[in-house]
Length: 333
Image (tube, rainbow, N blue to C red):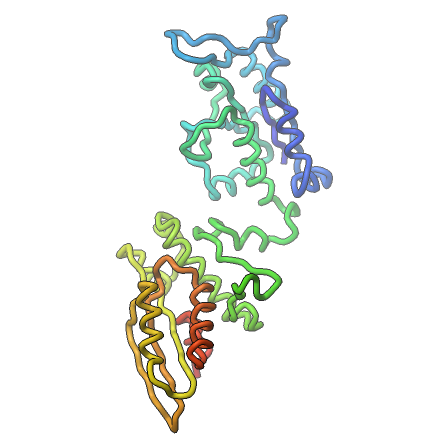
């Protein structure tokens, strides 16, 4: 795939894209990034490409002549039907689905504005499609263009090591990505979730899916409306009602003593965690308690696991917290 970047600062773009994954992709011939200096198409001896706006106002505008000429030059190589993308805060919001659509094209022409923008006649003449990374302003379109190139290139066959490298990432299935962990298994008293160390692939996949759902509900609930969810997942997140409950199972096991229930309940109260159900038994001096709790508040699950383990050690019992779905899966007959 060929990317043409029309810019006043070609070196800025070229240098940034000569490293890491994009460099390897370019070396392998999977992508071709060509920077076109708009100043080269200025007709005046000083290579001036900006002028004051008609009607007054602050700043300068890029003049239409060099922009159109640079675009025509790019189209002579990319093809007359190649799309021209103008990076602008006024454009259509760029998102993963747009990147996926762009990745199916043979070439893209990315136009980087500068100063106060580009003469509207140039944009109309070249049929530019305006693309925005978000509701913020940059000094130029170069950084936005590099973001588009990176997001599109990594979807091309062979650019990443495995298709799974992007298929499981945020937005690829309409949801945010689940949290990830690597060695060591315990870092500053923060442990990797037990399920990830279990080797049980089905439970791991289930945990990751649930974590992805919950993170999306917390951080980007707007994504749920278009996400591909099963009926069970929709019920789990409560997407149709705009609310959800993430349930955890707390088990307490150890020698019976006064105050176990009170200390666990006090901890949960301090954390603002609601107890949904509770049962406890004592058999020949051994205490066993199970709680179903609402852990859908702003708490990191891993932190709760570590803190409850610590509480159990202080009391002299074993306290374990598991996600409801993992608990059910492990105890299903």
